Amino acid sequence: FFSLCLQVCSEFLSTLTMTSEAASTPEAPNNDAKFKGANVPVKFFTNTFDQHMQKTTFHMPVKVTLEALSEFVNVTLGLTEQVRFNFLHNDQFIRYTTLEKWIKKKGITKESTIELEYTPAFEIEAGNNLPHDDWVSVIRRLPVPADGSGDATQHPYLTGSYDHCWRIWKGDDCLHVGAGHTSAIKCASIINASESEITSGKRKRNGVDCKFVTGSSDGNVLLWQYQGGKARELYKFVHSEAVECVAVHGTGSLLATGGWNKLLRVWTLDRLEEDMAAGHV
Image 1 (cartoon, rainbow, N blue to C red):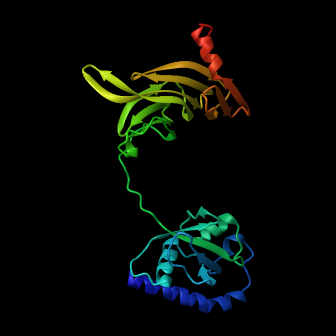
Image 2: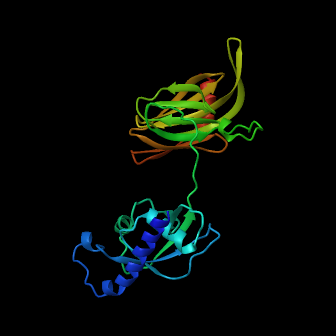
């Protein structure tokens, strides 16, 4: 660690000595070479860490990695225990490996002073894998009361996938896999949900009843009822092209859908249920 710190500081000091020379060096005529061997002025600040860097401008090599920037902040602050930092610009995380790649993407000139916010990188512990057969495109929390345990991982939720199926989960337990679309599920919205008890032979377990809609690349929006551990497709709303977004009004009376056919459609769910109850649909 200390050898790396010395290397970072050495590179930084050599950067400072090169700054005056770089100022008199003409820029290369093409964009690819514009930042070759150059330095950019950078100011560091933080809103989340208890130690602040000096309000000064540092001339950093454009080819510096974000990992090296993190080391530089550690050394400059004199931290005895290493902290891994992430960096933001205008409240957006920088996801590139080097400043150079990010600068080119943003079209920033080397004369512009870049203000970087440093914030501790939080390590998130991975939970259990919840398998799907293809990309997961949508996750929706089912609005049922918490069980009082305080364990958020046991809350039920709905997922949709590119494998054409939706799934209802409670913790690591997949309660149901539903199929009805002929292409990828792109979106979903919950109408209502409540806790229930599922009976399978002599076995009883806590479950959930819910009504929801799913939208798909097949151009259809399907209305589903999941109750007592069984699912039923209630109705199909048809778009002429892929459906990208669905939203249900808070009361569950209206459904809005949007798709690649450049149309936003609003459907009356309460009237639909009345017609279904009367046998008209």
